[in-house]
Amino acid sequence: MTSTSVDQNSSSLTSGRRYGDSIFSALSFSAGIVILAVLVGVTAFLFFGAKDAIVADPSEVRGGNGLISYVGPLIFGTLLSSVIALLIALPLSVGIALFISHYAPRRLAAGLGYVVDLLAAVPSIIFGLWGMQIAGSAVPVFEFLFDQLGFIPLFSGESVTTTGRTMLMIGIVLAIMILPIMTAVNREVFLQTPRLHEEASLALGATRWEMIRQTVIPFGKSGVISGAMLGLGRALGETMAVAIILSASGGGYSWELLTSNTPGTIAGDIALNFPESFGVERSTLFVSGLALFVVTFLVNMFARWIISRRSEFSGAN
Image 1 (cartoon, rainbow, N blue to C red):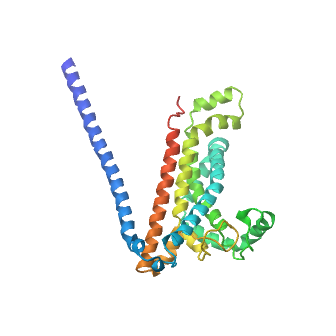
Image 2: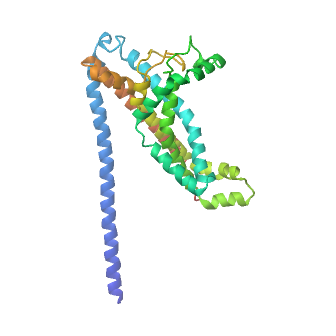
Image 3: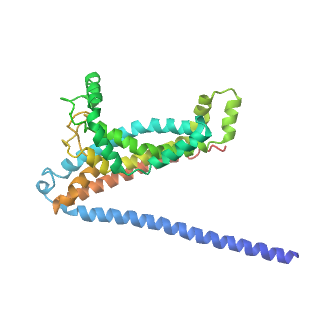
């Protein structure tokens, strides 16, 4: 083969690669534009639906005391239930993921991985029905917490509700819902830890837990944060489980987790009241949806900021 033919083949191969790169770049750019367009469209839709309540007299707004008085407690309840779920699910997800990735035998780890993935696909209404059924049986546990930890504002109040449908119950159900997603993300992140780092730590005399603490957890911190924010996003927007368990709430701001004086959540409130609302009342629910959209957007921005601070870390270095 002459040098001329070789040059022609390499030139055609290079031009083909450049053509493919151009197509991929154009598709990626188009996908980014589509995402921005959808984001702008959702924002405009919510603003259009909320404009009547924004300009309406406070007495006409749902609740009769203005938008802040109505939406504020719902935002508080949404954040409170989601934070409770995250505090319960985060350590459990990390522990389960570490067991699957570094402790369990290979066959058992594979089976547990399939189970975790299947649990992530369970519809939220199933968790809601389950939570509603066990709420009554959880009352003795809530009464124990009320008696022993009543000096803490979270477990204080006049009396424990006999139905068991409390903010703590909502947090537990949401934690079970987001646990499979967070566990799946953490498991995949921990499995990506460079094998060389693990073997080097063990070779220096570290125990398995010391090796995990020195190499696996530092390597997977960004992934754990990403999984936590993914779970938090689902908890913030959860509708049916909250609507089923917390069908009626006392409203207002309250830190009490074991009483009937429970604030609602935005998603649950919209699901319960939207079909029967019209005019300004329905527009008020659009304001609630806009508030949830903003809260979720801020949470994701915060998560991206945390992850970007650790972008200089590379497990391959």
